[in-house]
Picture 1: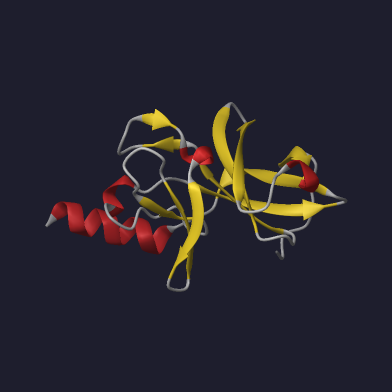
Picture 2 (picture 1 turned 90 degrees about the horizontal axis):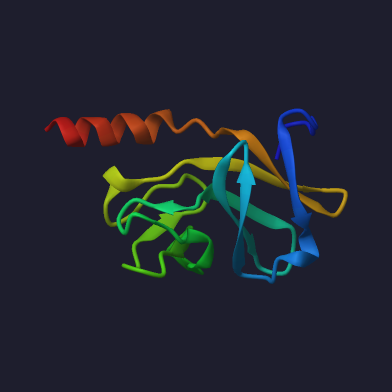
Length: 132
C-alpha cells in the first residue's frame, strides 16, 4: 500500500498472528465496527464495514473468505451475499454495498485507516442503477 503510516489516521487492531489465515475479526475504528480480514498466510489484509445491510446485522467479520473469479470476497454468514474485500461491493445486491477501509501490516501489527476508501466509480454506478 502506498499510503504512509500516520498514527493519527491509522488504528492498530491486533498483531497479524492474532488473525487466523482466511478469517476475520471485528474491531472498533473511530466508533465504527469494522471487519478486518487476513487472506492467506502472508500479510494480505482487508477491512470493510462489519454491518451486513442485507440481514441488518453486524456479522461480516464472521463470514467465509474466498474468491469469485479474480475477486477476494467474504460471504455473509446469514444470507451468503458476497462482499468484495477491496471495494465493499455486494456482488448480488450492489445497492447494499458497504464501506471499505485501507488496511495494512506495519511492524507486525494490523492497522486500519479511520477514513473510508473512496469508491466514487462504484458509488456513481450504484446511484445510476437506483435512479433507473
